[in-house]
Every structure is written in C-alpha cells, then in structure tokens.
Length: 227
Image (cartoon, rainbow, N blue to C red; front, side, top):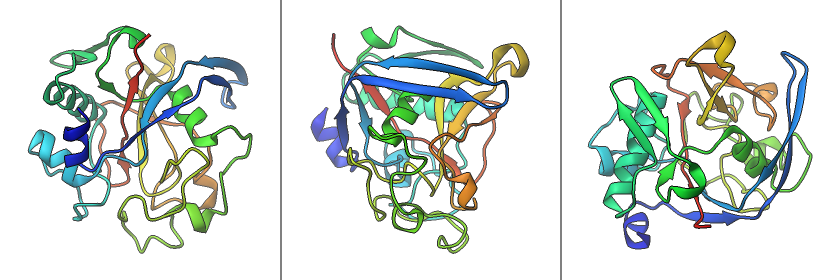
C-alpha cells in the first residue's frame, strides 16, 4: 500500500483521537462528536493521482500537481474504491447505479471520504480558530489564486501537517447535509480559489447533489485505523 501511495504522491498522516464541537447556524443546532484516530491525506487528490487510478481527466484547469476538480461526489467515491482495490484493501463503498452504501467505517480498511466532523476536526488541528493561520499564507483564494486552482502543498500547513484545508478547492465529505430537507445532497467544506475571505473558514458548510460538479470542488481521502 505504501508503495502505491508513494507512486501517486499521496501522503497520509495519522490524526489523534479527540472531541470536535460542531454547529449549523442555519437551524441553530450545536453538537459534539468524539473522534477516533484516523488517517487523512495531507493534500487534496491531484489530477495526476486521479488519472493514474481512474484513467479520467475531468478537470477544467490543467496541472498534474493541481487538485482534481469538476468531480462529483460519486466520482470521488469511485476513486476511493478503485484506490482501495489497487492497494489490496477491501473497498468501503457498495455502489450500484446511483445508490451508495457505506460499510461500517471503523471496520472497513479501505479509503473513503472524511466525515464532515473528521474534516473540521482535521482543519482546526486542535484549535478553536476559524483559520489555522493568516489566510494569504495558508490558502489560495480569490485575491491570490489568479482565477484558477494551484498546485497542492505550496501553502503553509496546519499544526497537523495538512495543506490546502482552506482554499484551492472545496472538498466533498461523506455526509448527507440534511436528508429530511435536501434528500441526497452531500456536504463539502473548506472554500476554494474563487472564494473571498469569508468563504475560507473552518466552520463553513455547503451542499449539493452528489452528481454536481464545478471547477473549484475536489476531495481528499481518509482511512479508518484497525481497531
């Protein structure tokens, strides 16, 4: 597995267990999630890695080291399954047409999208700040991105070694946003190259249908640790 990830320039880091306080200002809900230790990619998945695993080149902007974008939630899930298979791991997702079921995360060793709580927990890296540094130092956004995505890993990381958690591209998460109101809509987080400062916050939540694609929306991968 390590050799395959290395060939794709994917680096995973192990994040510690902990507690994250979540909130949804839309409905005034506040809740806490106890996090188990898990692995997360240090950058969004690049175009080079996506093409090597799937054979696809969906991105609007060219650049092997730029984040893959213009990918749907379904595309991201399929990437995770294909990467798991090439690494000799059991895939996490059961996919049939437009139906996707997630196996119990704690017992599935394959790659997956992070949960929304995992994403925010990783972005904050043990702090309660809205950002993990001065925005221009840590993120590609409207003022400095020159109207497009930029190579991953060039901006400063957070305290846990994660780059581009804010800016560059929004990132799909595994969760449905609000099934009772929005049905299949999935969450994405983090802000992108086209966003102003207020779009690049650890707490920002957006949503769309899992078939949605746009040129500032990509993903990074996670993996549960054996229990």
